Amino acid sequence: METLDKPADVPDSVVAAVERGDPAVFGEIVATYDLRLRSLTYRLIGADQSLQDVMQEIYMAVFRGLPGFRGESGVATWIYRVAYTTCLHYLKGQQRQVPVADCSEDLSESPDHAPQVVLRLDLATALAALPVELRAVVLLVDRDGFDYRSAAAVLGVPVGTIGSRLSSARARLRHCLVESTAHGEKGNGRPA
Amino acid sequence: MDDQRDTELGRALAELETPAYDDAFWPGIWAQLIAESKQALGPDDGEHATADVKPRRRRRRWRVAFAGALVVLLALVGAAVTAVAVPGFAQSVPFLGRQIRELERENRQLKGDAQRVAAQQQTLLGKFAGAYQAAFEEQTPATALAESTGLWPVVHSYFTDLAQAQVVGTKGDNAASALDDVIALDSALRDRVHFLIAGLRARQAGLGQVPTAATTVIRAYSVDLDDAGRHATVVVWPGLTFLTWVAPRNGPQTANFSLPYHTLSLGKSDDGQWMIDDDVYADSQLTALLREGGAPAALVADVERQQAQLAQGTPAPEAAVATLRDTFDLINHGDYDAASRSFVGNQTDVAASLRKQAPSIDVRSIASARPIDPLPPDSVLLQVQAHVQFAGDPLAGFPTYWVMQKQSDGSWMVSETLSSP
Image (cartoon, rainbow over all chains, first blue to last red):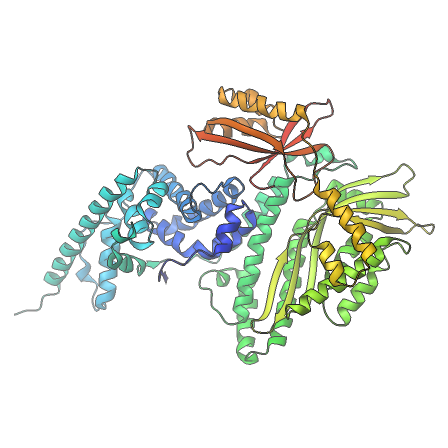
């Protein structure tokens, strides 16, 4: 398992090559974006078994799309857009959107977790409980640092929608985390 | 709008774990890339089983894409050599994993021995170039014709030696000498090539780079033989030239270059041996390199004139422009089936793509453009300036450059679209 430290800066050479429509940049895209795209895809589709299939579809779509890329959007916006639409297509095919759990899952059954691990599990569970559109917006803006306009382009929605979805996503994440924490404290309570 | 980002939440989200791929993932991607590249050759390759095989840009771009992926793989292997871990990527390629682990182990022993690391890179370079060569130089009609007529070994040696001649030391010197075995004794090319090599070496020395390995992969795109079988013109694309060098501060480096098309003229000597008489290609650096290599002014002037002619491009025939305008009109009227009949190749796919994108094209100008790489004699490159809106896929791209190809009946068709010349 890998963790995402921070969004890597996109090398200028990659941006320039993509904007030239130079497909030779494909390999650099893989090296630059793989962890971020994989993480986004995993959180959107939430299925280990299918992650690789979906990632393969994403990369092949990027590969095929490179010669036609016109630079009307940013490089990252375009690649994320490909990833997001591929995930949506997959979810539509699976006829499901929320793959994991709800806020009340009893995390206290797992003993001796370090607090940080428990927090991550809580956040992962809370995130998975969000509708895919809300998950996507909070990942794009809060995790990967997209501005509203770029996030809107990735998701194919008006810019104003980003703000409202973001508020909703953050509120629901906080609600889940608070509820989960309370539940966890209750479950871990020692006898008086 | 960055100030509306919840950075604390973002950090927590970034710390969530992401599963790694299993070992089969990256080989699967490479296999798909190779399959896509082969598919991009198109089912019509057999149609070109004549001496006149047209360069196909789309094919080239797919090849380059595969090459790009391969080069990054090379770079990552190089990174592994210098003990920079690339989690979940290089390690997940089974056929490389063993080599990488071995190199990492050796790297720990080497403790910065740049020359030995460079040697390791050269070995890998050779292996990858060989693998790429096999995929790239697959049997095309032009290659088959070049082989059957005995042209191919000469052409192949010329490009291989030209690349290796850049390497310092005996290996490079031997390659430079070997060029004399394939270039006609009385040709102007013989001197020119040696001045070019001297120029390349001088430039690399100026940059403090010491080339230690080089190889190139080439592909024949057309072969024209005269009736007597004594003279031939072969159009060759050196798809990728790999070069490894040792930089003073950064140690071993690997780079690749995609070179322009070369048009070779060959003649058969009395003893039946093909020799290269001339090599024409557009290269903005050629005259400068010749000067740096000490070429006499007259030779440089000749090459300068040749480059100026190559740079002029081909004027746009009115009929080609008219065909393109008619095609855009049909697209604007939503008659995608009719519009697709202006395209060479799979017109069903073209119509489906147009239908999906549903573009509205407001043409501002159509003019001749100068291609970076030479086009076949019966093709022209047109640059289209237009305002385009997509009623269908909003992220669809509209190509700026359109290659028009003259058909045997005198009509013009779109053979390719490009985003850069």
